[in-house]
Length: 292
Image (cartoon, rainbow, N blue to C red; front, top):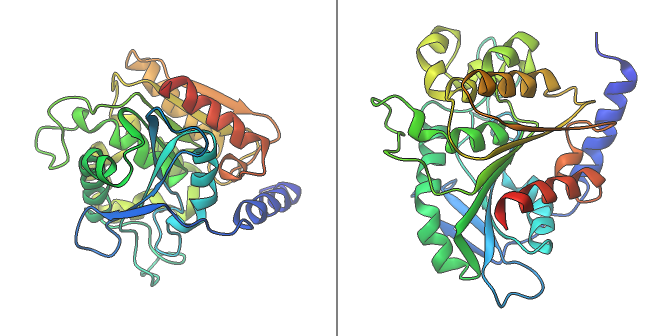
């Protein structure tokens, strides 16, 4: 049973992260025809004479429809104020209506959620060059929080997918690295822990599709990637516990790859994207180490 004090702390952290007003982007571009096929761009603040690294941001929210990119716009603005060019990506998420045997709105759509992330990543170099000329797409780092952390790891591993996958890349994507924030990075462990009400299985279309689709979606099954990867995780996270991140790091080590893991004391799930929290500065530093 979860400690009531931990639940109270998590609620306070979430309230702080969601208290910031949304920040309007400097430009928006479409990567497809669906209303969710959009990317918001934030120009680097301050001295912009030199091109700035591009940070691709994938929001979390358990792949569920009620959570869109708006809740991470203050974080996107924070990164822009650190001197980065930022691309805040939207993608199709689950239905707004609860499904049978699901607690609340179902998580994700198969295959649309993955279709969208793949399409957005493929389109971003050209979109950024047009919408945000300050961005140096040769220095791209992908980051994401929670379910978005999963998508960030997955986006960097598409060249590891089986040859029959429609999302497979013939070679590694041109990325400086990945910084995954409290990611749902190991689906098996996440399901065992009941993370986000079993959202991982919902994303794959239900338990009947689990074994078939897991190898195409689970970052822990897509290793090694050969791309520099760092995970930032709060030790007090009760939404996506640190065991999930540790399982991914262990899977990477078993595959012969070293993944950096930064565990933050007295930090839960939401401070990683809260500009008012010290943890947010740690995230920016992790991105800087890969980008600059």
